[in-house]
Length: 239
Image (cartoon, rainbow, N blue to C red):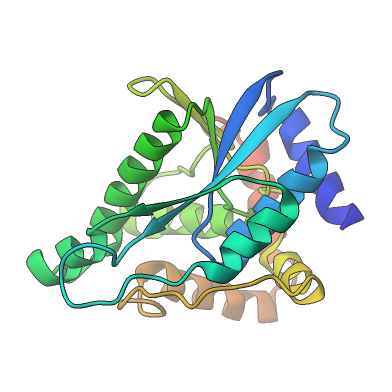
């Protein structure tokens, strides 16, 4: 816990992620990353010198439209109650739209766009000024590699993103944390991880990039950390 808090606090301070009085919506998918982020921010809130509030928001991707069953978030709700964080579940028809109506062959882009819109609307409706996402160091490296290999550009998501249309700010407090550290954290604290309901889970461009980087790391140990350090030192937007 101490290391996770230390890395999150460093990222928050390095990129000035939290201001006094912020109400932060934590996007909770039910995966290890978002649950780790939620627990870390809930614990950090107890002693961080800048006061802030939290609300956890989950998008139920299968709640409306189609024949898929709505998600069961009972365990996550109990987890939020234990942490003292209000919990909101937002019903959506995103899975129905992406897979049943549009029948997208490459669904990730549209799905991500719809999820961002729904989460941001829910955050605004709940009086939030910030939206916290569970992206970590490996996510940053994978995004950079995907943009390089498939988009012919040097780009990555930013630690802090201002959304001018909504007045919200997106923050990513786990950017200094590796996926391996998050996996260990999730096991140690027995986080109530929910099964990913996405029909494309495990067969995406990001997953292929993850496997490629994992293979490269076997022959060139530490390559992901070196890429991440290059992102930070190369004046890429937001870093």
